[in-house]
View 1 (cartoon, helix red, strand yellow):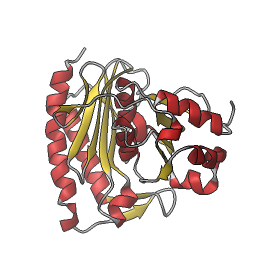
View 2 (cartoon, one colour):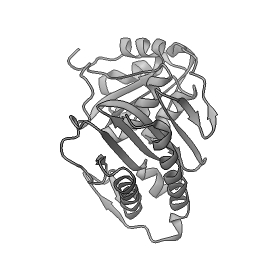
View 3 (tube, one colour):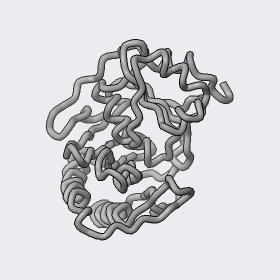
View 4 (tube, one colour):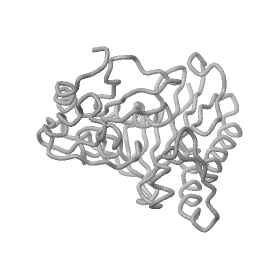
Length: 261
């Protein structure tokens, strides 16, 4: 087993560089391309940050496997007996392009198929949320206490804008049962707000790089992370993912008309 301290020392140095790259990126021309549709964007900065992470991983931990949002993908990820890294270089790319705010950078580490370490960098706030089962969860150098296990009626709910507009699985019923709705447009920030108790739940359709880091941190903090159709998580598949306090999770799922349940 790799010492978590060895991994963390290297990774925190990388995020110091990534923070600087992202905060100064508006000084360079931004090249924007569409992926699946006009709301699914990728920029040269996304690609630059992912390339930086890949280079550092391959140099420092050469026997690793990698899954990156922008195309870096090794074979044999799900059964690899070693370190597997999941990279989301810029999470909330639309926010980054249009606002230069409300976006994150994320990295998850798995070892022998088990959750090892997760990292979510809130770039604008310059706060790195990180941790794992061996060390707890931190914001920069401050250890976080688990959020209060409140019911849905006592807090705010974060749901993807598309799910809300389409009333996917009747999510509006869950919204009405809460104290209010928030839509941030970033999975990383969505996880951070549940980790810190600012919201009681976050629900969105997510790719593996969207939830890999947050899932590790949420589990350590005693939160529930699950697919709403009850299927197991798959490192290579997208899912409708809910992260919530245990009490809020029960309340949310009672309100949803979930597929295949």
